Image 1 (cartoon, rainbow, N blue to C red):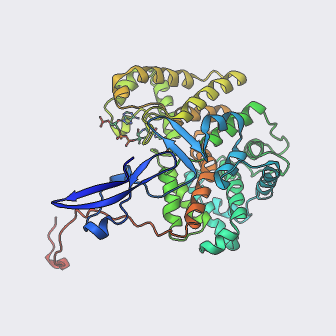
Image 2 (cartoon, protein in one colour):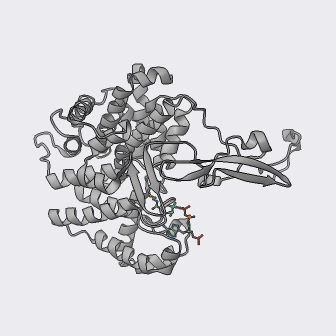
Image 3 (tube, rainbow, N blue to C red):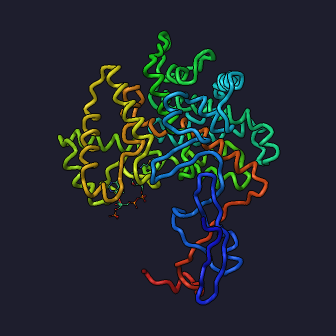
Length: 434
Ligand code: CMC
């Protein structure tokens, strides 16, 4: 095991320590690089940069491993449920019966969303992005709960349990409210007695005189989809949480920024992009074969959405679980979705194709999660907000790590400037047309 590395710049050598994580990952500790050499490292997109030490999630992209607090994702998917896994991710241990009960009660008590928050929604056109609405509603939470959002780590850590419970529970309620608002339906209030997922389905689908009747298979599938999204190491939106939190911003503000980061099609928006792609293939009368050929150009606009991953180079373990669950749910509900057949054909064809094999491109979690959500009755416009409900525990746990790190410092990467050299200001009268 190397314990140090040497950087040679011209003929001068600089030693750097090598640090090792608990799973044996090694990193050259370059924290003194600039001070000792006068150089910075250039790593566009931070693909080779460890931005923090973390105890939450371990991911080995080459081996297709994902573990939360040491527990493999397939075991959590099989034996746990979203609320329990959320507790594990936030607090580091599976809850005992008492802790689980208290956590559940905390979520139940904090399900309602402030009445004024409806006004925030009403300020949006009904066809606005649900993710923009969700980010705005979460950003407003500090205004209603200033006692939980002091922008002071010492104070905010004292009220962390309540803030965390509120964030998980209210984000779920907000998503249901956004669905009702964007579909011109009256809001449905949460019911204290319902479990987390059933309560969500109730707020989404109940009618004034007809309560939604929970279907166990549907609740189970929803639970699984949320659990599979609960955390995923230093992805774009979670890094955003840490970035914003590092300025000592409170939990809600940091989460609001993360929700915005999640909205893009290469991240949380990928589940929408997958469904749009499958629908397009279906509408074109293609079985996927023509699309696969076009996707091999690799151009951003014609990529096979739901394939490839920034870190998984073998398989995404979540994709296997969600693919199997998708089959089970559709069979149980007796749904024959033509998009599932197209997805399966695309997967089989891509996994045989040298273009995808040589680039190590495999289905990711989003490839099948959209089809499950569609079977549950969630419209495509809301898919990314579902990802946000699921990812809330990961955001919260990462915020907590930043806030409780005594050696923490503000995130401030550097850059390589490639712009104009210094020049004199040109008065307006002397500027040409071009
Ligand atoms: N379809 C076709 N070609 C692809 C795809 C794809 N989905 N993904 C990557 N490639 C090609 C790419 O063109 C490049 O080819 P070449 O070496 O010839 O230039 C090669 O594969 C490597 O691609 P890359 O862009 O360097 O890969 P990346 O690690 O930077 O990007 C990615 C990862 C997820 C952004 C990308 O694979 C992609 O755009 N996938 C589709 C979008 C998607 O499904 N995103 C969801 C990610 S999972 C949810 C989450 O965790 O946020």
